[in-house]
Length: 145
Image (tube, rainbow, N blue to C red; front, side, top):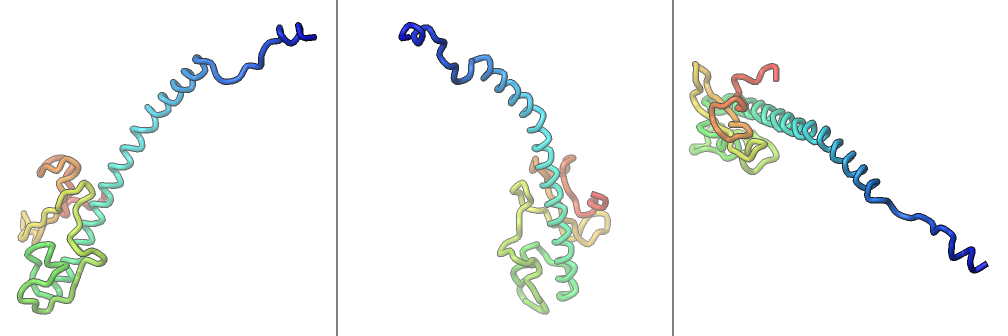
């Protein structure tokens, strides 16, 4: 009986190198398909966040103008009262101690008066941080986005 045990095939455990390589290739293919889709969704979410923030600035600026009779000289005036305080009834931006940056970590650009007869302009320089490029988000051009 001891001879039978000695010649018995051992139980195979674990994976072969080929099986592991097949799994790695499948994972790599899935990653190549999924990752670009996820990254593009992150960019879309950041654009939506910038648009939402610009719209909240517009609402706060309109409230400021109703109280003070003039547009704020900077976005900081929406949080901290200017001198003289006048009829300032803020802060006009809620739940933030400072003016928020755009989703890419750049400050929003606020200009008074705005171009083309607009009373003010608010814009984000987008992901590249450069003004006047295709990824900019502007208050005068966000309808329909």
